[in-house]
Length: 303
Image 1 (cartoon, rainbow, N blue to C red):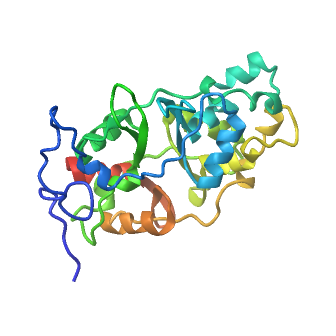
Image 2: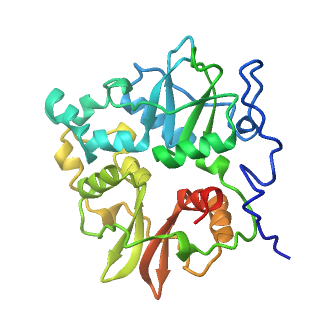
């Protein structure tokens, strides 16, 4: 029999993590976030190239990498897949290529990642899961580096949305109660530069692809980065590289959900597929999108 989740008791994992008395200024005990955080965190230094950081993301299947001092591991910032997409043609950071490199992608991708990294929200090891969730939901970020001490900022771990995502057979909340209606979409004939700009402007990592009102695929930030070779270009002209059509790079076999499904089924799909969001369909038409962020918000903060 499926077990129904009690959202008043549940916080931060598959079971209650114990008393929340970790925030002491006398002895720095580890908060319960350290029980779910990834300790073998992959970092890189500020002078590493955009191309190399993109390759790191591909190699480890990460969408974000903390930028730290090579020797001290002191946190400098955070590089994300969206930042790299922004740089390669999605947004304002593309101006670096246009102005500093005359539109030459092959030269521009060798610039240091410090040029495009963002400021990183972080917590120290005394933080609770609730602390991290609040930052994720208010700052709209999917990963939080954890430091040994807020003064020295030595990175010792990282926690992501998937780490804090609760798992249960039944949440008692349906997809249609939390999904985003009227989703932004792409069409097969749009250029890669068009979807890149949409993703960057809205902070979306995936877009449903619609043709004649029917779902025909999904295009993600990693599809675009893979198409661009994660920095390995056959040509040098940015405009030419970004003029490819979405239908050439999209995923045709999209994983979908329906509005009446319980969020527990969405959590199961996230775990099984590694995908962080799904089109919500009815009779083949997209009526919404539900993401791991929507799930986390529903469980921790209520609908």
